[in-house]
Amino acid sequence: MTSIFHLKDIPVCDQRTINNQYYSEMLEHKVKLAIRSKRRGLLSKGVILQHDNARPHTAQLTRDKLQELGWEVLPHPAYSPDLAPSDFYLFGPLKDALREKRFANS
Image (cartoon, rainbow, N blue to C red; front, side):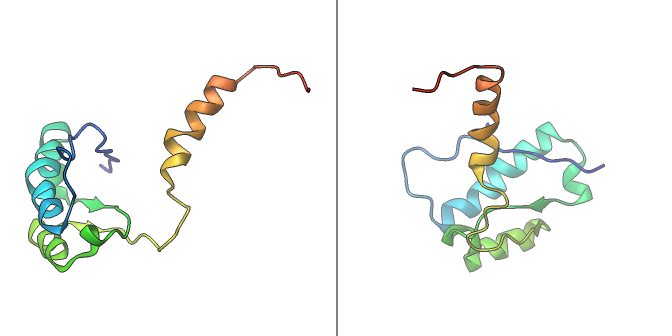
């Protein structure tokens, strides 16, 4: 079974800079546990992770952690608008809010 899992409910940080060390720890301790609790059995079937090309995501320490976890990374081209957060969290709700509204030209 394939599953898309969005990690918006995981508290990311407590007002600190996310570096490669923190990101690697977050993958193992927060993301892995969230997947285990919300999608039982998914970890044994394999995880494909998509994140952007920010330095903490592409650092050697992070790549080593992902390999240790056995997770595959779905490549994300630099400056790609294909998976822009605004497509999911801005335009969708905005479209719903404006549906069937009429505006007068001024």
